Image 1 (cartoon, helix red, strand yellow):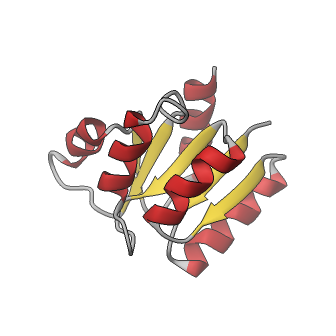
Image 2 (tube, helix red, strand yellow):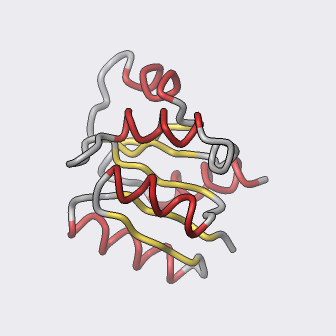
Length: 120
């Protein structure tokens, strides 16, 4: 099972997703804004990061760029989580440094498949 860093500012989304991941045996660390997520990534060394893109303090776009520019965190896969499902949004998240993209509301089965694919 994976150690997952969930960076999500919405308490309801954070609670729902973390409980469902824990129930499947994953270890879940949580951050509530982009800056805290960046700081925690180097502290807890997660296997994968689930990163909301619309965050306070530092948004997911900036956080992903910082994480991918840092030697300590650049190899950690990042899945962008966003309610924005417009044309071009997936490409924009990939350009920011994310390894995959998933839309909200989260379809857990689809998200678990993406986590497994990135972790091998």
